[in-house]
Image (tube, rainbow, N blue to C red; front, side, top):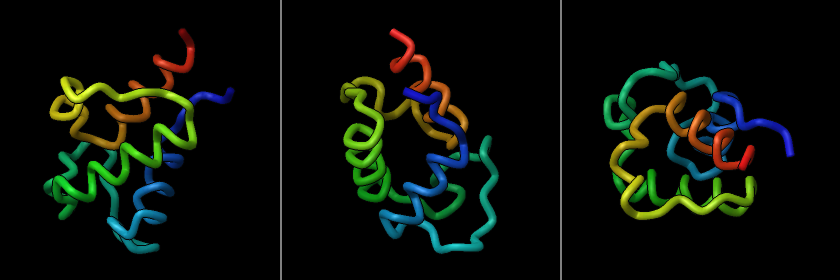
Length: 80
């Protein structure tokens, strides 16, 4: 399986309607700063789990707060 990239996470945010095509995305900015709320984040994680075959435990939910952190986390989980 290919490593998860920032672009993969951005695409999933668009697919989940949390972002619109062309929205500015700062990969190291908190998701909340980009207007992404808890429900959007939950839906994103469901898509990530489905598409990338990883489980994201509830205890990791809060610490995964940026696009880059999510991509790195998923890539690390895939490598195991």
